[in-house]
Length: 194
Image 1 (cartoon, rainbow, N blue to C red):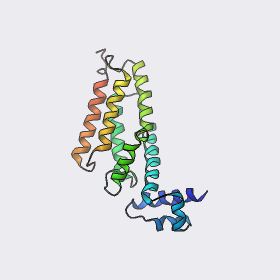
Image 2 (cartoon, one colour):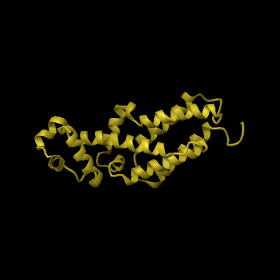
Image 3 (tube, rainbow, N blue to C red):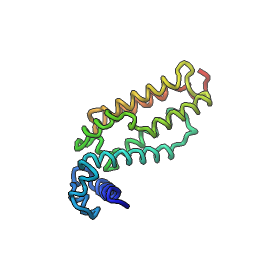
Image 4 (cartoon, one colour):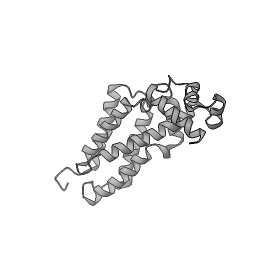
């Protein structure tokens, strides 16, 4: 591995065990076996390195959640399971919980606002493919296009990304309800042609 990969690997290990706030550049460089000065040749700051790690971890976790879903159940059940597993991961993963921990939350949200194409790209692709399948299986409303349905989910992703306090049980419950209502709203009632 090169120095940049060594830095990334060391930082990933430290952030995974200790969170963002408890790790400093000297800790990362010590574990990576390089000088502090070398760190700054590859990353302008600890925050920039963490954002890169966060993006990779978020994608990895979301991909794992998607792979674990039973796609044969009704759409609202899939949506509820996805959001439940995602919230569990955000609560238990020291990297992902930084989204709402207050240590680097503003920087993460600013990054995603300035780079909206990076926000949950694997989830978006998954939803687009799922909508196509549900459309073929006649599970979706016929008065809404897939693009309109994706706009609903994009709005939910925007809400989630800009929610001020993810740590509040009420905020998390609200997001869960909104996802459930959106999933119920785009689908036909189970077992009917309506």
